[in-house]
Image 1 (tube, one colour):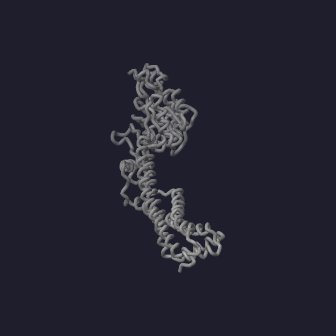
Image 2: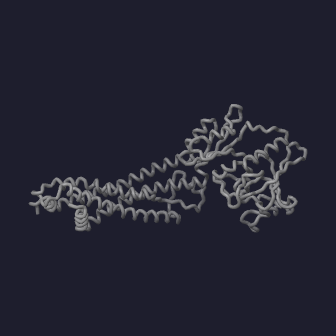
Image 3: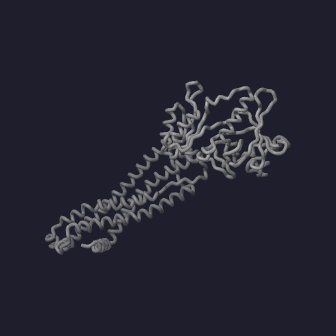
Length: 449
């Protein structure tokens, strides 16, 4: 038999008993849909966890700290940073210098009218800061010149008007009047610090704001109401303040903190392990993400097994349908053999019928699965979902009440794999009936009514 004849006879046989074929296909549809939906819920759970964690902080960023202050304790020096950058998987690394403990004041406006008495100042290497995910709402960060900085999104609201009475001398974001007293990008800023010797002398530095950071508390307060310096500028300012107070800056002590970014979330654990071997301590979202990922994988496996049971039941239905078809078509099989039809053609015919049932059920099941998944996500977005357990409540609260978390996610590979699996299930279920059909003797089959 030619392939065209096989296809034509296959379709004729399936359409001859429409009700039986329809019910068998529906069994495959339910089984395929169960597999896709169950696995998609597990994938959705994993995606929701990653989305919530990413809102709490960059999953690929690692914070590095000194473990002690003794002479033998590991230090974060320029050499240490070079060793960290050489670790496979490290995309960027920079020391993180903070000036929170120093008493700095900032003045702006004519006659130093506007004053800020609190400052969250952080220094990072300029190129590395871009890799770390600091985003700008306006402007750009110049890499040349001294004391060029980026200000936080609400930086101007830190300033008080020294010519207005106490309690009415500051403006808050979101309150009328909405605009701050000045625009830091068009106003020169003066950084001032005490000499530290109680002699009344003060040190001043002129700052130029080249851009404004997008607020991101996962990065730090410097993105909201602070300043981001280039590392060398803030280091020089702090060294000058130390010299003015009679202390000699010692660069050999290195920095207290550093920030490392991995090129992929899969490399975070190995990078942390290498850094800890250097005697430094680390922290990242990996300690939270890893247990949650393992929990999600276990639930995904459990849900997938439940769906596979449904598809196995559908396979039994295909087997039953094909066996009944053989008993009804025994005479037909005998006639086919008597007319010279080869044994392998008979086997191919029954396997093709079983595969067609699996393919049809798989395609319909894929379509139904996308519809069910969309309804589940709409219900969750409307607040009808029950949410996830295992710590997801705290993460969702931290991410914000208006954050839309997917309940079911069906990637393209899952849909195609489910259809292919349905076809394989159909072929496996039709293998025994096909063998039984081949074993029917031609003469005995023709004698039957």
